Length: 432
Image (cartoon, rainbow, N blue to C red; front, side):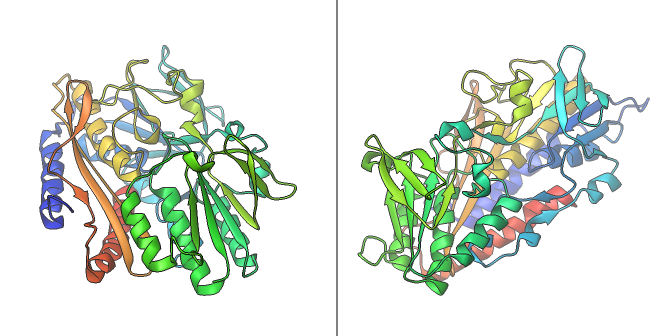
């Protein structure tokens, strides 16, 4: 990290967590009528709200609505593509939350009535709430690329929601001949996990280097720059010959006709740039444009951007009272990441408990950290702390930072260990 070392950052992060915990009112309602909080979405944000609401005030009735019985984390799913992780290692269930008193409804939330304060589910349930938390993640804008659709994704996978799509793309990579071409497309901002497409390209190159070294990955990008760009290119140069005739990776930014406008699954082709240059490949991975999850759109929680405006001090929707939106769907200055959702969820818990108890909300801080595994024993990271200030979330100067550009081989190897430790910690926080 540039201005704060890892030990100092972790100490600061722990301090923030402690402040949040101390700031949360742990007083239970004497009459055990703490209110009913319904949570839509059992991912990185929703699970944390459910768990910490029960810890903060056991008198609050908590119901989690999630359509899937099992959850596959998107984070670390690129390692499945690289062959260093199994899809089952990303699979988690909700039994531990149920044991903590969270009611689990394994159905899809189909409608929200913010006036009647009810949620309707696919199984016909109507859940009345005092406070509602919506953590729906993203929806994929298939129509943002001509020729792409949910049906086409069965041949040209997006793999941007982990699970069957991840397995499909991994199978295609394994079946591809040596000397084949893989195309990965990166979407316009904003989207889930900003460094994700570039880690994905790295992981695919990592696999090809070991098993199909005559092959290459072509990255077609809707943008001209990306997070941790210098560090990624440094890693690609060292590990995959980036910039040479034998490079495993080629990156075409928007300025070089990289923005994909059309796909044709019949002949496995992609058309990019103003001139619609044609590229063909053996395997194509289209990561389409994105917006807030469907239930947020259908319920009027989004604005013209397709994302959800919120009060960044509490994450309460600015469009519907007593409805809170966290994670990828919310409009903030934070990256759309699992760790951002985790941090926002804990602030949201404090906001709901203080609201239900008629107390003043604390002044919140947030933390985000993100690891990317570029190749064998080669990891990089970025971290930041955000404070609420005058209606916005401002990055705290001097806090956080990125992997140094002159990091030693041992430093880069430790970043991989930190990444795996981060994964273990956040999933334990969510599901135990």
